[in-house]
Structures are given as structure tokens and as C-alpha cells.
Image (cartoon, rainbow, N blue to C red):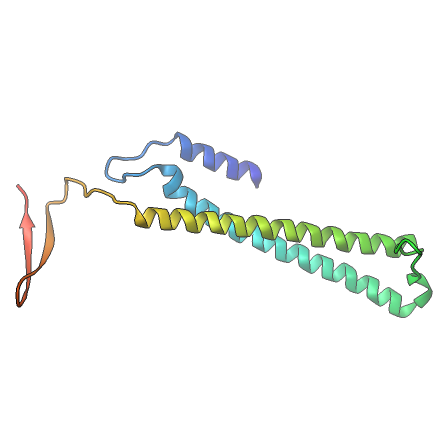
Length: 150
């Protein structure tokens, strides 16, 4: 997945804009790559969160079935290595889900920033528009017409 994302970004950097498009392809398509990346990272974070919940539920069920398995030492670790392994696995999935969430939210913020930047920058109109509607505010009326270029 990382290789595909890197390859896409590299291709966007190498591509040149068509004169009617204006703007750089990195920004034009990069915002969509970031938005898709955000969705993907948040989906993976949700899956890892579910895995952590499932592992912890297994640990909890084992402790409810046999209370002696879940005795804790002075250092906070479980005496039973299998139960300790389940607990550490749950922590691992939780940490990974947190990192994926931070990455997904960062990608979403980046995508939103590029969207806003593109909307607020001034883009000159191309010269190849044959006609365009024109609306003017007059004293007591509004004028509507067409401007034709030859």
C-alpha cells in the first residue's frame, strides 16, 4: 500500500499540467490521494481497535472462567504468561490503532488545507472561452447578456 501511494505521488510530481487545467498536478490530485489515504488509515485503525477489543474480551472471559489465571504481581504483570501475552497483544493493537488514527486525521487535515487553498487562490480565465454570460448591476435594474469573442 505504501509503495502504491509513493508511486502515485511520484507520477503526479513528474506529470506536467495541461495549459487549460492550470495548477500543479501535485495539488490537483494530491488532495484526493490524501483524502483516500485518510479513509484507508481510519478504516485500518477501526479494524485494529476491533482486534484489540476482541483480544481483551478473550482475556476478560478467561479471567472470569478461572480467577487464578489473572493474578497480578507487584510490577503489574500477570503471573500467567498466556494472559500477559493477551494483554500485551491488546495494548499493541490499541497503540497501532492510535497511530493510524493520527495519520488518518493528519491526511484529512492536509487534504482539507489543499481544498481550501485551491478555492481561495485566483485563477485567470483561459482565452479559449468563445462566449460567457455577463451579469451587471445597473442603477435600478440588473443587466444580463452575452459577450462574444471573434
